[in-house]
Length: 255
Image 1: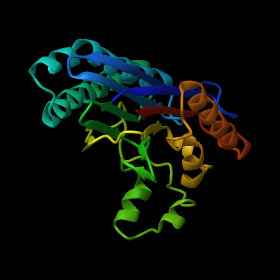
Image 2: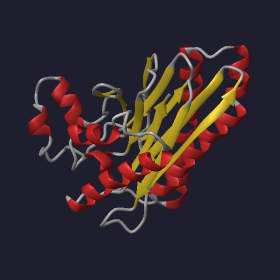
Image 3: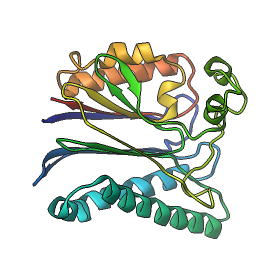
Image 4: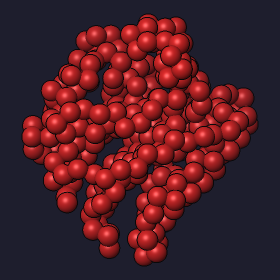
């Protein structure tokens, strides 16, 4: 299995800075080719969200180059990935929180991170950035850690009500602004000729799953140029519909 990748980010129509951070790559390893992506959304309502997001992206990139090669020798397992990624998150939460206290500001970030090997995918999520699998359908792989997502799960809100609920942007936790962090982990078997999408919430608020599927069907995304073109079209559509946030999306196609 091989991979085609792309990444797009846009400051949007209202923000002074782009507080999103992302990184995506294809890796040659003893396990065969892998693809790795991490996307963070610095908190729009908090100061210096871009510092928090880029700090976490950098920490996961360090893991790719410093820790993943050793795992390839000893064996990549669900528990090993969970333990190492949780350690990164716990450490970054302390670092960002301490930095914020020293500067007299509150800053934080979401994170969604994904590693795809030849036989397994691994996802960690904190906040409301998302990962999707797009093949013959579009399927959300992660669960939002938000107040409205919790209320939907408890049967107190419908998905339609959640779209206009005043708490729809309230996170249950984020890195740097929460005392304790409880990451969600998701594991699965990657499909061939599928597209795996990571996005910030700004990418998905003003467009539908059907519109995403129409642009990102695997058979359409034949190369990186087309992937970037289709992503830009959806970013522009978000902006035309007055999306207020930064807008970011990373795509991995398996072939």
